[in-house]
Amino acid sequence: MSQFKVVVTDYNYHTFAPEKEVFDQMGIELTLEQCQTEEEVIEKCRDADAILNQYAPISRKVIESLDNLKVVARYGIGFNTVDLEAATENGVAVANVTDYCLDEVSDHAMALLLSSVRKVTLMNNEVKKGNWDYKVAIPVYRMRGRKLGLIGFGNIPQRLTEKAQAFGIDVIAYDPFVPKKVADSMNVELVELEELYEQSDYVSVHLPLNDKTKGIISHDAFKKMKKEAFIINTSRGPVIDEQALIEALENGEIAGAGLDVLETEPIEDGHPFLNMDQVILNPHSAFYSVEAEAELKRKAAQNVADVLSGYFPTYLVNKDVKENVNLKEK
Image (cartoon, rainbow, N blue to C red; front, side, top):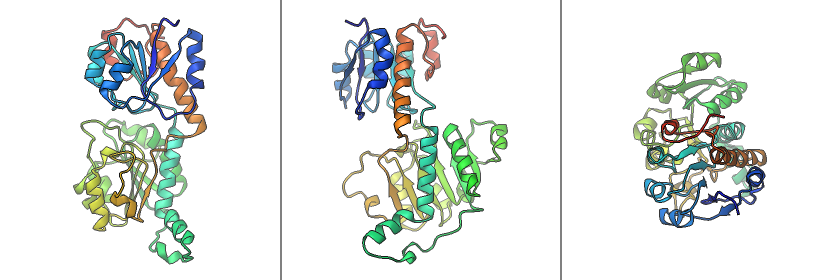
């Protein structure tokens, strides 16, 4: 029997071979659960030393109920499912994987942008209905010389910058945490958020979800955007005020949206987006490729293995926890 208990709280994966490859070296067996509520996580993870987490809530209540818990490793870049403050106070390391899908998400954002601007999805749907007529897509504007505004300028939007610039698109960005020299090196101008809304022909969102970013893109933002503008979101659905976006689209304040993420997932029956030809919807899939999924699972498992071996994980989120735990640097 393994000296450690590692539980996957919830998952939509078909294989756990990458995790097992990491854990077999330590004699650890995975326990797979499908928790949706705090109570289910507490019940199924009561003796867990480590948790691998996808979407289930790892709240203060959960963390304070799991006496053996040493690490929560997220399957992903975001960590909004975890109460970081509670984890830090209770000596629980929280880890994510920040670099597993940089090309996948930036490629997907570019694909949504291209399909929105060139009306590819719209025309595909019309052709399949028997309507062979490009005029259903009018107007379509030339992309070269247009301006893409990036809200957030971390690793993924920096990759997207290179791809957009290859199409002759100029790039500006808003990110108060990125040094000007980083933007300058990529020929990107850093601007204030209001300037970005006013100047951009296309807006691509790359924000983490937290108390400060939830609903940050709302009525005022859409009123400042150009009527020909498209907004792309491959980050987190709730950073956009969805009702404000619906109203902006209905009122013609912007031209369209390419959304990989929504406030509520999966999308609810009867949602207005489902009847909007100017909205492209994907099922939170931008992260995915065969290679990216395997890399994510391996690195998430390694975060757990590091902590259970007495080391800080490579991708430690709550760095203040170092004061509360007896772990070593690798």
